[in-house]
Length: 544
Image 1: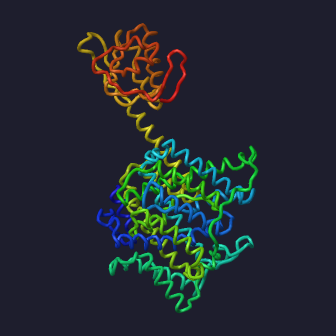
Image 2 (image 1 turned 180 degrees about the vertical axis):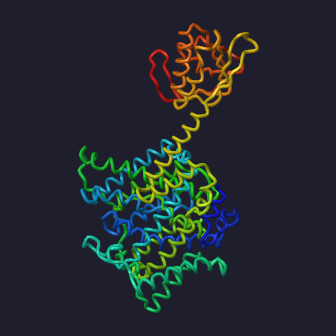
Image 3 (image 1 turned 90 degrees about the vertical axis):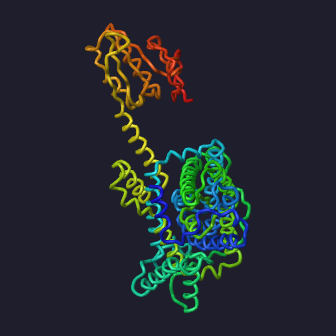
């Protein structure tokens, strides 16, 4: 399914070489591709950052500064070259209540604490747990995110209005109709067509950049009246200034910002690590999860002290980058620096770019991100996997990414546990070496989910006086399994019958109390370890 998934990602964009050839690493051709890819990403970042700032209820520059700082720092020290980070909608929707109730200074303090929590997660190597996300959850994640990106672009088909009376907002007016709508759709379609056709003509310029450039030139030269970047808000500003959040340093402040910081840190890391895996699938690279956690943390900590709203990895812009040819840190660094140049010097020009061109680019991102093969494999994969794909997609759209991933992992884990619980069974036979003894050959893992089934395997009343339980084809996983073995041994002893336990690991020998003297030592006993630390004398459980 991975090959099919990668094939679906490639649709809609020119597909550059997926791996960076060694001889291209510092070549002029490679540098040109990286810089042009960064320029394309920067152009797409502008309306996104402004839109997310409005969502969070802060000034547009707060979003733009976050996109610049988070993007630059993660580009320099992040775990995966090619990834793009900045202000995101997943974080913005959490910030709304905080800004509304306490003001933007509390947001800056929250972002600083959020970054420190992410650094801690990286230092603890918690990023490795992203490997526990099943492939079905990843499919649901990319599908749901593609739908979210698509829905977010629909707000550009509204007449720009006011947002809370403070300035130009996104989608604050009514839906476009008639000729304005037709013109908007036509320009979006033209942009998409250029992106599709351009690679067949030349690969000198990234197709998305060509689409933006051609459509912007047509609109500016012919004076076509369509919504432009400047209709959202002015992006002109200065350099971000160091600023300590103006909040009281007391327990009450911590009580306010800590819950938001934990939620933002978790959402940011989940989205970043999933994007890291996604980019890794395309570029053929692995690892870097904990490094990415630290990079995101450092970026957000710094951003909080420079008036930014914080951020995380952006799957849409990351897809634009890798599909435009960006393979090194140069592209992401260039994107951040180009964005700063836009803010400082080029805002009058950037504000003339039609939103239709950027919408067209994002629509192609949607086409390239959605795992189209998942529509066909739904009938071929196990029913539970199909359910998880649809569930994660739906929750991503209607709730948010973090909740969707957590729900998907929990459902997948429960399904896995249930399937393993049903695997426990026993083959019975009369012993060839111990006349009159009945042998139970246990098959399948013995853990908390299968203990009831394990106990039900035994026919205590009808069994002979000597019973042998052989665990050679089983594995005792946790303390619940130990308790089940103890319970069976107790029942046989109460019935006046002898039970012998074979092929248990050495730690089982030590952890089993009452049944410990019933174990038969063998040279071929397994040497696996339990996932518990069970004190025989106190009965206290602890994790290894």
